[in-house]
Image (cartoon, rainbow, N blue to C red; front, side, top):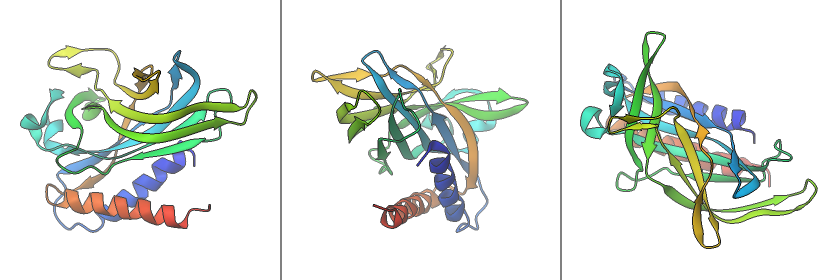
Length: 223
């Protein structure tokens, strides 16, 4: 399944979940997409994916970096990452699914809001490192063989925290190299708003609907 298909599937499930709600919407699901190569530590490994974030509308009242004390509870609903061979990037060689997370393990701790065309939008999200998920990436394109077999962690950064800003809003994955956690090169994340949802009590329903949709897709997927 390509990144576009993953995005459509996640958005469709979120829209179904949002249809369950009759309350006034005061938060939104934002989608962040990325697609880079890992970097020199594993030059044939590429990763692309989509993160789905729950961001309160109160965070968009003004620009700048905010944490939960500024505008309410933020959450990573799910993150799906496809691993591929940089020399043959079309086929997905392994798919990793992170989340949904409990309130005690949710990794989101900040968000960056920017004004684009007169509208305040999510420009970046900060998370702790989350995972790992096991991965086994085997290339069929010559020279064939194992590109990576081991744990993968993931992290999003806004590029701006505690009044210190940078020029990108990256995502990273981390892999095990000689028993050391090695960080990928930064992947610029492109954020778009997907659907409005009520908060805070309905967040649990949304996460449950997303998880149910994912399980249904798993059960009906061809082997």
